[in-house]
Structures are given as structure tokens and as C-alpha cells.
Image (tube, rainbow, N blue to C red; front, side, top):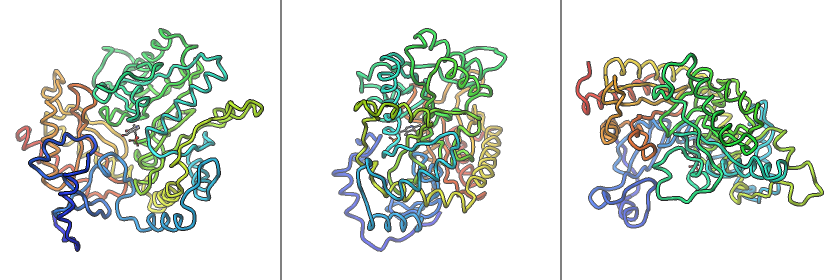
Amino acid sequence: MSTTQFENDLSDVVASDKAHVWHHLMQHKMFETVDPKIIVEGKGMRVWDITGKEHLDAVSGGVWTVNVGYGRDTIADAVRDQLVKMNYFAGALGSVPGARFSERLISKMPSMTRVYYSNSGSEANEKAFKMVRQISAQHHGGKKSKILYRERDYHGTTITALSAAGQPQRQAHYGPFTPGFVEVPHCLEYRNQYGVVENYGERAADAIEEVILREGPDTIGGLCLETITAGGGVITPPKGYWERVQEICTKYGILLILDEVVCGVGRTGEWFGYQHYGIKPDIVTMAKGVASGYAAISCTVTTEAVFDLFKADASDPMSYFRDISTFGGCTSGPAAALENMRIIEDEKLLENTTAMGARLEQNLLALKDKHPVIGDVRGKGLFWGAELVADRETKEPVDEIKGQAVVGHCNAEGVLIGVTNRSIPGYNNTLCLSPALIATKSDIDQITGAIDNALTAVFGSGK
Ligand SMILES: Cc1ncc(COP(=O)(O)O)c(C=O)c1O
């Protein structure tokens, strides 16, 4: 661990922050006795806080975002050049980077054709929900307006995105919610809900069909799922799940919306998570890694068949998608996204993600051998979770305070990791890892080394 000296005196910053900044997802009482951590600088995989302490960031900016790492001059240059040339015009008109990025993005998503720009993951999902509702109103006589979402998934922070949240602690106190959202069961095999079955993945997908039949297939227009669930516990779908989900959507004429806000743009070692499973979605949403946090951008990407439903009748003034996102017209987003994509390609970061992901998996499995508190290890590419249990037999989750203590120990050692939080009551017990796609072997080993030390400190010496 090393420290750095900053040129300017930043002592006023802590005071201003404590006096006026309302931090996300934080209880502020503790800031009466301790200072908030303020991050000042980042380079590659590392960030420095205001005290000069260096941290290896194993969570890409805390929430799976900075896929290409910190301090990328070329993204900053591309954004700057674009801003001085043409920073903004509302999205009813086109822009040079908007057109160019759409072309590049679609080249990575062969079955899709249209890109709708906005500026957050929540908003991208809201667009998808609005599309389903408008299709229902204009093509199904108001039927097929319900949208299915899955237990443990999360699609954003706005009230309607929260209406589709399978995370009761994210929802609590924010209702009443938007009507017409219906939950289907999660597919986490480690938390088996169906006993001994021949193919768990198919069985878990069949549970979706059961909900469809209960609600009435002609009432349901969309099924929105995270391809790999992130904040709900890093849940990779069991074998056979996606094939069956696809069959069910086709059978009942339900649009399949995949939320790739976390697992899109290289995070899993493919451009998109769904490409591991051969799925053909109707709508894909993405945000965080699209521009690695260098600019705010999100995309709702559709097939031509979905797009066509909004242009079929030009004589009807209500038939097109009557939606706008003011900041979806910012050109900084697609300018940054273009350069972000070039970096991923030129530096072969998908290949690196696959290789370093395999190392991270191997290291985590070795930790599981050593520490009985690790009950399950799940993930793909550089997107992993380790579920902590008090007892491997009963799978009783550890007290979430202990998971947070592990995070605290890693932090003290200069490694930033995460743990699921305020999502599923009693099950905020999965350590989360999502290092940037540039991670090296030694970064991966440093991350798992810190976790090893932290588990020993919190739970004892293991085996
Ligand atoms: C899977 C998923 N979808 C959507 C969102 C919402 O994205 P945003 O915070 O950009 O609105 C998140 C945020 O964490 C997410 O994890």
C-alpha cells in the first residue's frame, strides 16, 4: 500500500462534504464522528482518497461501472473535443457520435437494430416498460400490459423501476408502486426452491410459466430479467434456464427484456451477458459500463420488429414512441462510449476478462476450500460473488454485520470490495467483486489475498 501527496490543500473539502452532501445509500449519523471517504484521484485499477491512501478497486467504482479503469486520457480527449464542437441537442435530432456509436454497438448485437439513448440504467428500463405499455395499448387493445420481473432482481431507483424490483429492502417505504408488475421466483439453485428435480434450470423457468398461466398469458406483455443478477446476490442462471425462458416468451408472445446494466459491455467476457446463453432478446438495456462512468449514458436497444410497431401507422399522431430524455441528447455519452469500446477491442479486454475471470474463480474456490464460511461462489468473467453462510449444512446466512466487517478489513488493507446491501432481508450476505476489465494476475491475487486475510480476521483461521 502506498500513499500520494496532493498538490492542493483539500482540507476544506471534508467540511463542505459533511455540511452539505447527502451521500447515496448512506446512514449519515456516523459522519458526526468519522469523516466521509472522499476519492480524489484514480489511475488504472487504483484510486487515492483524500488522506493520500491508495486502494485497489475491486468493484469498478463501487457499482460495476468503470470497466476500462481510471485515468483514460483518450476518453477525456474524445469527450472534450466533442463538447467544444457540439455538446448538446435534443434527441429528436441526430448527432455524429450518437449515430457512430449506434452503428458500433449494433455490430456487437447482431439480432438488434435500434438504440434509444437516455442517461441512467433506471431510465433505460423505464423506456423498455413504456414500450411494452404502448405496444399493449396500440396493438393488443390494452391487454398485455403486465410486466413480469424476478425475485432478487433490481432494475433501478425510480418508482416504476422499483415496482419491478425483486428486492424488498429497496422497495420498503417507497410505495405505492405502479400497478401491473408481477413477480416470478428467482433461479438461484443454491437456495433451491424445488427439491430434487431433473433439470433445475428448466424447473426454475417453468415457475415463470406458472405465473403466466395464473395471471393469464393475454395480460402479459413483457418479462424483464437481469441476465446475471447483480445486487440480488450475483446469480448466474442454472443450465437450461435461458433456453426454457426463451421458449416460454415465444409461446405466449411476451417480449423478453434483458437488463444488462451491469453485465453488458464486456463485464462477463462477452460483449453482452446474454451472448453466453444464445438468447434472442427483444429489448436489451445497458448503462454503467457503456462509457465506464466517463459520461452518463444508457441505451435501450431493440429489434427491428419492436421498432416497427412504433412507425407502422404514420397517419396516427399517437403511434410513435412519445418519449424524451433531455440528457439523452448529450453528445458526451456516445463520444465516451465510442472510445470506451475502442479500448476494449484494441486492448483485447474481453480476452483478458475471460482469463482473469478464470483466475478469480480459481482463487475464490481455493478460499472456499479454506474458509467454511464461504457457502457458494458464483459469477462469470470479472463479475463474481461469494455467499457467506454461518453453517454450510443449513446454509444459514451470516449476520450481515459480519459481511460488512469483511469489507471493512479489505478496505483497511487497501482493497475495495463490496457486499450486497439493503436488498433481500436476511440475505445481504454475498461479497461482490467486479474489478475493471484491465485487471492483472497480481491485482486478482491481491484482491483474493485481502479477502483471505479478512475472512480469517472476522471468522477465524478457516480449516
Ligand atoms: C441491474 C441493474 N439495473 C438497473 C440499475 C439502475 O441503474 P442506475 O443506477 O444507472 O439508474 C442498476 C443499478 O445498480 C442495476 O444494478
